[in-house]
Length: 242
Image (cartoon, rainbow, N blue to C red):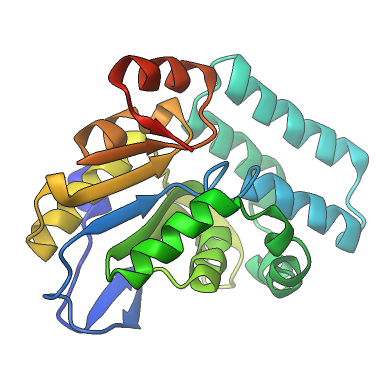
């Protein structure tokens, strides 16, 4: 399983879910700061926000919206796993549909809705980390085609999301992998190895109990809008909450 999450970091470029992006030299970074996306950098779930935007633009049925909300509810409160959530939504709504149908609407989504949903306390922490020269990342279990434009909008150094793969016709074909909590923790370990940075010099911001391992292995865990379980743990461990 480890091969799925290896990050290839080179001196002047990094790979982002299979795409190379030119970056400055890597050796000068002394700290790593990682942010979850949903309910951390933004107030809400990126996938649901984007789907609501599409519902208005593409005149999607109320039934589709209701079904999506029901899957999300089952994940939050009825033990539907992240893998099951992605699989159900992918097969029902995305399989065999053109990826361009969604990506063509992302610029409008970024312009119209994203600025209104940013969670300012976390955004200020991101801007501070960037100004201090930290290596900044967004690690999210949301689909990669949603995470990528938000990551570029926020100008982070690296991003990774759940991989939704397409066939040769550009239609959604299968889920490559789901970026769950343990996978995020593995990304942090790999980044630290590649940048030669000790984990004590890392900071992680997240809202979810699913990211507990990621928070625990970081030098400075920060809890953002925590769910009930994570709030209890953060109180026990005396973690900072924003």
